[in-house]
Image (cartoon, rainbow, N blue to C red; front, side, top):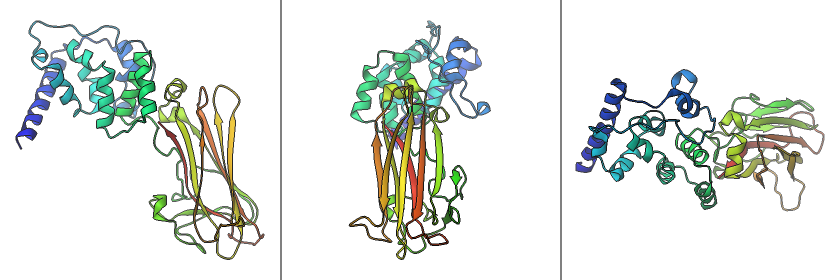
Length: 327
């Protein structure tokens, strides 16, 4: 109880000082450079950041006043309190209160702590890259973006991955009687819990190839090519597939990666006729692609059909399409 009260009191001090300074118009950070980097984040702009890079978060640091109450708080205490403050408030408001707090929030080490406090686990390799990045401004923008849960990394970038929203978000080329969606697999086992999918929805193909494609533009996930070049994530692609008990089927998962050079393609084939494969069971197709310089888009494609040319929907079933930039 005592610790909780102390923590609450510390936060009250932070917010009281912040609000008083803003009300007294003592924030001297100019709107120009600072706002281009992070100040545009607000409800009115649909919660987005403009990731324009600058060497400094602002062109002029806040000044120190002789009666500055913020100096009464030791740096270590400020850092500990800031770990409990929403990351976006730190970027947009708290860093503009005074030079002391500005300097704290220009610390790379602080933002590493903040990323972890927000529950974001970076690999040792990624931490090393960010720690060694010579451009502090770029490193801070990435760490702040991660802390604000704005960057599309370590999360599935595919929308409607199992067809729970029908064929929405997919560009579909129908074959046979067309690509369809089942609320639960028909003629095969239920999708295993291991897949971690929220529903039992799955796509089901027909007697000639059915194709669905989704283009992922990384800028829509607040990821710029220079960020990807620093992070160099592994591109993890996967999907679950099965066949009915009474009809052989096959499926192919493809991914095409677009960067500053020639696009790079990967694919994985699956067939229920392969030795050791049992119909009705679900199998995970997966592949890992390397980062390419200037990465800006990823195209995911699945093509499925049956192998016996039966009218209806007896082809391969697929669910949980996934593309993850793992950092």
